[in-house]
Length: 101
Image (cartoon, rainbow, N blue to C red):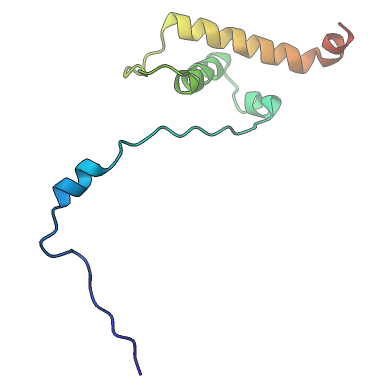
């Protein structure tokens, strides 16, 4: 005996617009991925490109309500990314010295 399948899509006489209005707006989901800093930094042969990538990552990780729609990185974003790159680089290269402090 074979099971009987019935198509239930689309639902006849269904008010799809009312159902869509009841849906909650999508929420932002953030994930944290642990990437070893040294491995990440070694993927780039150009320092400026590394800094731009870090600036983009920080742009989308920020808790700002509005993310700039422009692809151009502001001077402030670039300077902040530059500081991050320097700090990570110093943390990797001077690990023993930092522990001694």
